[in-house]
Length: 127
Image (tube, rainbow, N blue to C red; front, side):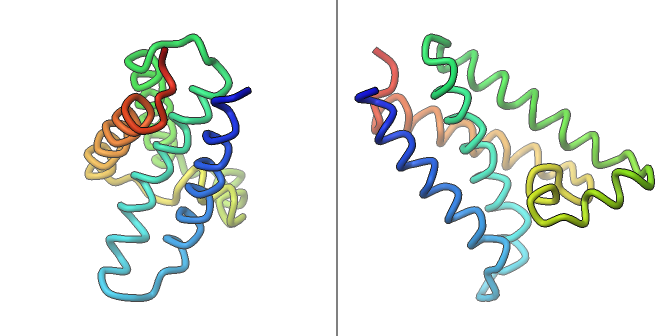
């Protein structure tokens, strides 16, 4: 529990930053909304997995996070009426995204590397 409180606080922070990135209207707003948000979202997934499955290694957590991100990204290629309709919901659109972009994979990797380093060396999550 001692390590979960800082992690929960950090997840809350990531949530605020992620929502902020969707509403940001300043300089580089397209990059912030489309790519910075990807970095934040994979960091969020990484830390949620690490919080739930405390015994998994950082490398395994990184691989699972990347696989989840890839599955979600490729699901954006599926354009059924049902998926189009549920993606209109703000929370669903944050989780599932709207459109496929190969460049997202780069930002997923960047976010996972940042999460890996933060978790291991700043938050000291791994014993």
